[in-house]
Figure (tube, each protein chain N blue to C red):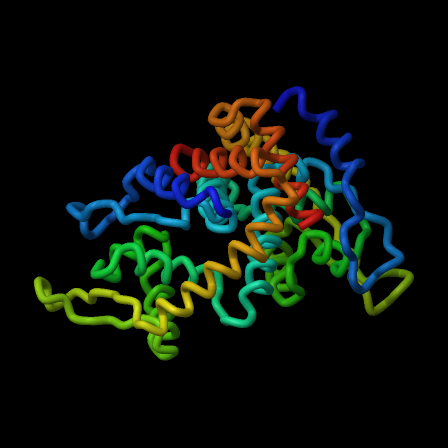
Amino acid sequence: MTVSKTAMADSAKGRKEPVDGAAGDAAALEMGELSELLGYSLKRAQLKVFEDFLRCMAPLQLTPAQFSVLLLLDKNPGRNQTEIANTLGILRPNFVAMLDGLESRDLCARMRSANDRRSHILVLTDKGRAVLARAKKLVATKHEARLNELLGPANRVALLEMLAKIAQDF
Amino acid sequence: MTVSKTAMADSAKGRKEPVDGAAGDAAALEMGELSELLGYSLKRAQLKVFEDFLRCMAPLQLTPAQFSVLLLLDKNPGRNQTEIANTLGILRPNFVAMLDGLESRDLCARMRSANDRRSHILVLTDKGRAVLARAKKLVATKHEARLNELLGPANRVALLEMLAKIAQDF
């Protein structure tokens, strides 16, 4: 971080003026070290991508987390709640609440495991499978296609690789 | 997304086995399209980076959002609550709660604006400035240095550029 002080100042000056709803006449704020902080940049990009995801998915009313659960259930039928929640890094109480929501919309079902009566096996319903198919199409054609266009295919792959490296090895 | 079906399957196979606390004997789940979803990858990487940030910042008990507020106040003294909250994309109720916390720890202060009595001007206290200086050092030497090592300086710059592009133009 020794060389970066000047780079920070430069990139802060280069930033687009942030949207400032109430006080439209206010000059842009000096971002300082913030624009060089990877965590901050990750969070801002993630929020932007999730916003667009929700917009694209409005007809189906699925959040990114709900979509990821349906995807995993489809690929891994008969796994239990703990396995799905752990794989997605979702905390148990949040996951239970999410499943309640998906089950009340008849998108997935919880069944007692034949091997372990204390454990719940998760499966997609027929409606869940149909909704997932439509959701995948929306994600691919509306959401990911636009990201692909913005970044270019090669950069998109490079970005995914770096993010996977951070998630796995940091 | 037409060519990516095979790439998806390949990269899913190539993934490290996810950590599965309770059921250690369970085989890794098939991630399918998830590992190709940019939003999902962003979220996983962001969570990992925030976890490490909190670990590095444990001696000072600052969250990433609190740190970013202190940084902005330092660079932009005398701005009002709305400007700081809007710049960081923090919702008003959350921001008010965060300021309450920072103020109770004597890290920042709210003062009535001389120009507009309805508006609150935010300033760092002396203690806030001292804590921020220590925090910056911890972030640079513990947190960002490790990220730099993991990614390499060139990749880190490329990553920041792509994230900024997404945050600004997507």
